Length: 123
Image (tube, rainbow, N blue to C red; front, side):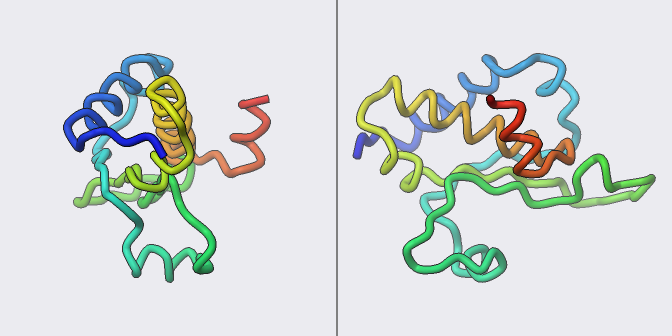
């Protein structure tokens, strides 16, 4: 497992945002992007994750495609989970790629894409 400090990880998240398609990043509205070490017990329970399953990122909110004029006061939230992401990589280059991929995946959920649609875009 390749590890970096919390500050370095946050810097890599910010760097990844700069490499994603500009129109998708600029159109994020009222979305908090945060970093946590691991998913909370509540998040794991909500997603019905088994003990052997992990989570790299999570979008929590109402996707744009489902809002239909819905007014919200709380921001949507994209969380990247530092320890599971680091456990997937062996070096800085792989870490940058995994952060970028996970961030893009969660942003796609914000826009209303499901896993099959995201996968088709990645192929």
